[in-house]
Amino acid sequence: MNSTDEKAPGNEARLDRRNLLKLGLAGTAAALTSALPATAQAREDGIGVVKHDEFPMKISPDYKRFSEADTSFNRFTRAGKSFHRKPKPEENRPGYTSYDWALKVASKEIHNALINLTPAYQGTLPKVFKPAAFNPDFRFKDSAMAHAVIKRAARHFGADLVGITRHDPRWDYTHVREGKKYHKTEDVMGFVPKTVIVLGYEVDYETMRTAPSPLGDASQIDGYSRMSKTALQMVSFLSKLGFHAIGPGNGYGLTIPYAIAAGLGENSRMGLLVNHKYGPRLRLGKIYTDLELDEYYDKPTTFGVESFCKNCMHCADNCPSKSIPHDKEPSMGPPDDGQDWGFSNPGIRKWYVNCDTCLQYWSDSNTSCSSCVTTCPYNKPYFWHHRLIDKVNTILPGPLHKFMADMDLLHGYGQTFNTSAPAVFWDAKGREYDGFGG
Ligand code: SF4
Ligand code: SF4
Image (cartoon, rainbow, N blue to C red; front, side):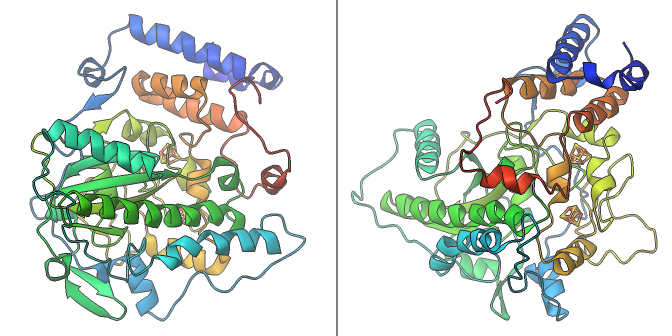
């Protein structure tokens, strides 16, 4: 069976989930019996999954740290523009009613309450928690134990994902903002960090199906509240064991490179981290500490996202502001196309997203958009057969990735501006996903 047969008129009825599953199983068998590509042969952790000793993206020797002042959010607001204006309920528009707006605004309350301790956003300095050990003689038995204890505690406090990596000053801003002032990052850090703990929070699948909308924003923003809560508990925990710690959320530096280094996922065409379990449906925060874990750091892990992105263009096709490029290959800087790209952090091999036009769309739509997240084939509920298909994707050759991405749309995934999704979210019975049609 080839892609032309599958797409022929009248054949759609046969493309139900069961047939897609069969296709995945057939693809697995075929791939396993044929010669595997070199990356798959180098796997250590499952089919197509590769663990790396070094950071897995090419970085130019000329790559330079930059100030938080250069980030798109700060440039946007410095230019006198704003996004996330006042709630404007539209009672007859699904996802935009008073209760959708109320959910969005209430989602931020925990973050607001903790803003002077563990802010999730740039612009406010986190409190430095100093060592306050119950027992000054306490030492972890070894770094393996420290690694395990840190991860267990972070999950206990509410993180869905935890990765631990070495502090890498390349990813820290040179200067961080406090209100309208900028400080040298090293001057306000309060200690010399050794380790960065990266925390990930799942963003609810149902609300994201409604994006772009205030309802779609609600779980993204709730992720920041959850981040602030976990960070506060974690920095307190580390302090009581005798270490310095701060929880700046997505402030003080770039969180995605730290998340990649900590093995939480891969970069993607849309510029967001794609995790093997949640896809791009994630919020990420980080904690700096002077706890040293010697060789017990997580390793970067790739599982074929870059290869898949080369042939799937869903995010670029569906971006309402055309901010995501259609270039087949990633590059070391934004395209020389006459567009104003502002500052775009060149020197890393990736797809460059125009964050200025993205933010302008946020402002115009009064939402955080997220159409790119919603439309991504990696954005799925956690069904076992979806995971199998993701595994198959890691070893299928490139042209079949386009076919798999098209299959996703055929099965009703990846829709944006979905006006029926809010009713599903607000259904009093709720909805559970069990992988068997539920
Ligand atoms: S958030 Fe929306 S506007 Fe921004 S890159 Fe994604 S799809 Fe485009
Ligand atoms: S939508 Fe497709 S191209 Fe975009 S990030 Fe997801 S997999 Fe990659």
